Length: 99
Image (cartoon, rainbow, N blue to C red; front, side, top):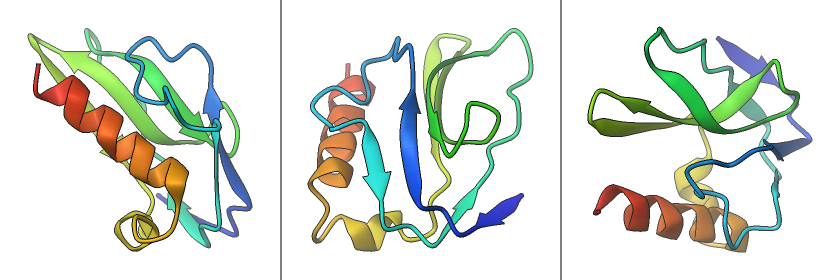
């Protein structure tokens, strides 16, 4: 589901995967966002960020023995050129996923 007019995406505590470590906890400047649907049990969201706790746009969860992270921000890749928080999120994702 695509949403619109995202003013700020904020981290929804707790961040059990640590993917938001090193960020300010807010991601701004996104004109649209995708609402990530609920994950299906036995998976459980461990880290999330969104415009509200009911509309997460970034989610991280364990699925079996792996970890899945969905980033539902259409302009996320473009933001990497100038947004320090987006750069740090990507750095944390690589650190987590390469373990």
